[in-house]
Amino acid sequence: MKNFDSTLYFITDSTIFSEEEFLFRIEEALNGGATLLQLREKDKTTREYIALANKVHTITQKYNVPLIIDDRIDVAMAIGAEGVHLGQSDMPINIARKILGSDVIIGATAKTVPQALEAYEQGADYLGVGAIYPTTTKVKTVLTSVDTLKDICKAVPIPVNAIGGLNKTNTEILKGVNIAGLCVVSAIMKADNPKSETEILLEIAKELTRQQKI
Image 1: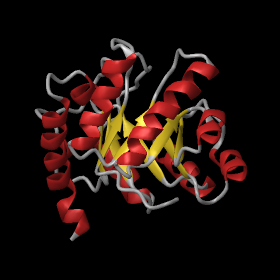
Image 2: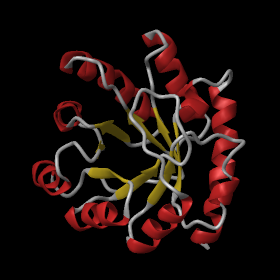
Image 3: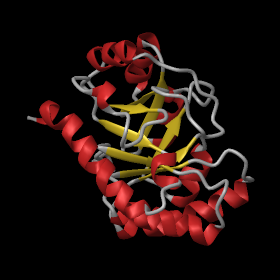
Image 4: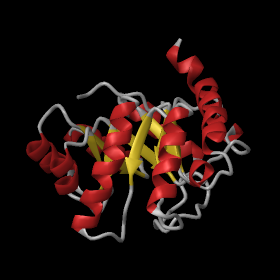
């Protein structure tokens, strides 16, 4: 499967929720229009990750939204996920591509133009670039300037998504940048009404990317 829309890319964070609440929020986000979903679990055992990923996959399949597994190629393969996202310290993209084949979506994190070019040349299907703002997630972040984001968008022909602390109040900085969409975590995950917040963010993302799609 290679057809995907990264206009509003929702990345999960289960750390403060019960499993029931976590799955509820995922479904609310998908119901609100999230176009791509990444399950990101840094602290779970392999068995715990697979068990949760299976439950999440059942929901994403219901909405026909691709599920991307963060870091773990083994988990993605175990549950038949549509894709995997790999950071700079994870398995190299070209090796992952050999293992997963041509039909699986492979995303990569890039913070510089050389990293972006390397990921593209090795077979990445999209890039996540940031952090644009400081984040509240447990993931280690290094801020990326909007100028670097612009340069990366110009350097590679694959979709580039902005990530890092983005919410409905602070995306003005991305106007005029040739991004394919927004990646959001806390803005949806911690929202009082995840469905409503997703709907708002989707409209913002569509507006930011509208000119690029004309």
